[in-house]
Image (cartoon, rainbow, N blue to C red; front, side, top):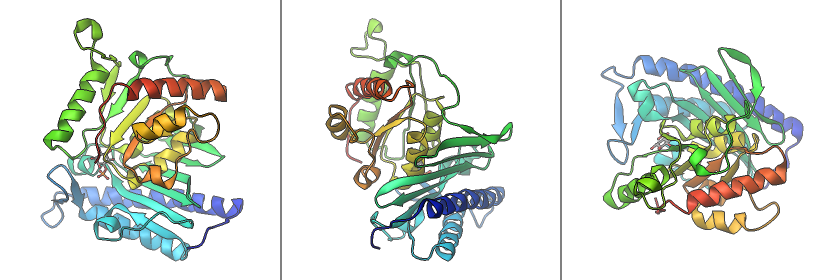
Length: 327
Ligand code: LIP
């Protein structure tokens, strides 16, 4: 598709449609949940026993893909299950929907409520719309380029702008609550790097862990999209993962950036943009969206340049102590 010059009204129409579509998908996820243990449903393995897919993943993706195609026939679609079926489409210069029908499939299978649909929309190579809806929690996160990001939930149904409140001080990693996922690739050479990184970010240097950063805590909730939303909200300070995909993170990237968070890719990418001044920092290109290495840190300061400097310090401190691998 040729590059798209959509108007603000057209962008808003897409945004509102994506929000409503996430609720429709959420109802389908809840219906699927009620029969996820029936003999016909169940779950299958993808890469291994930790990488699951269910009939509901596939049914929800079909529902979402058909709804988008009916409403916006010239838009393009990238989805986790379509990709798995061989539709490995690139992120073009058009309007591209990047969707994970159930982010947190393992959580869905086990009835752990941190599962959601993640709907991202990229226009001319820039992620501009993000919608994440967690149906078991009835919690909706959404954001649009230049319009901020918001959350609504049962005890606060009116959308609240993100980040939510002034979180604790974050000048060094030892003040941070971080999210770190084990993912589904458990081969020895990768697990060794994950374990070494885990040891470094949690370890106590005064207790013999050389270079330990002693973060306050680590959370692994099993959903990249919801990790990004918690960083956007300010109740996680940082989230790092290697191995998830563009459909896991696209919506979360928009929601987090609209809440003042900063997103980088690999160590090499981070070092290339942290040192330079100007707009390259926090610019998430299609190459970064698809590179499967993501690190996001929450908004730290109100003033833009002070915030960027504080975020760059945390990003540098984190990447100085973890091991990296290719997924
Ligand atoms: C999940 C990601 C999570 C990762 C899991 C899995 P899925 O996505 O959101 O960050 O650690 O391995 O990839 O597969 O449930 O859509």
